[in-house]
Image (tube, rainbow, N blue to C red; front, side, top):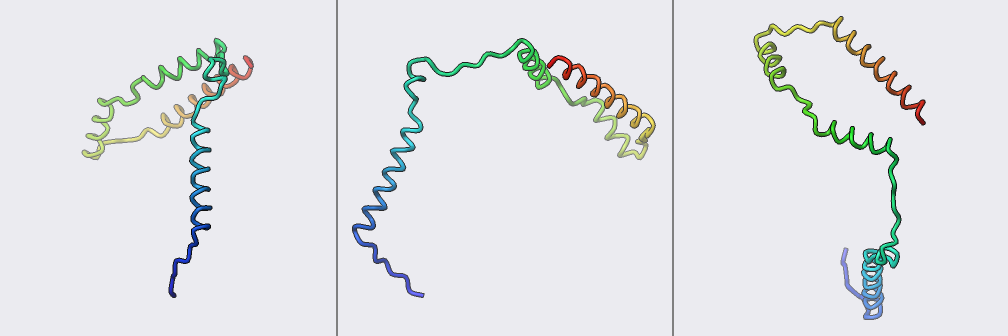
Length: 112
């Protein structure tokens, strides 16, 4: 298949004009509106409950999730072949966590 380039100057001008219009539109989208420039932009006010949730989320994000000493001990036990899982304890802990989460969710629902 032979490809030829027969773009007339009119076609190229139309294409270049389209590109120029797109760039102008992008520049207009980036420029702040009059309301923002004058300091009258929209504002958000958080309730005290939302602020408490925000603080809790921040504290959770900063909390250490990993207990290095525990990880080291488990790795050593696995390598030695002495690591044992207490299935009853795992099941009990899972159920306890599920119940606690359910209580928390009920408290959240009653506040709304």
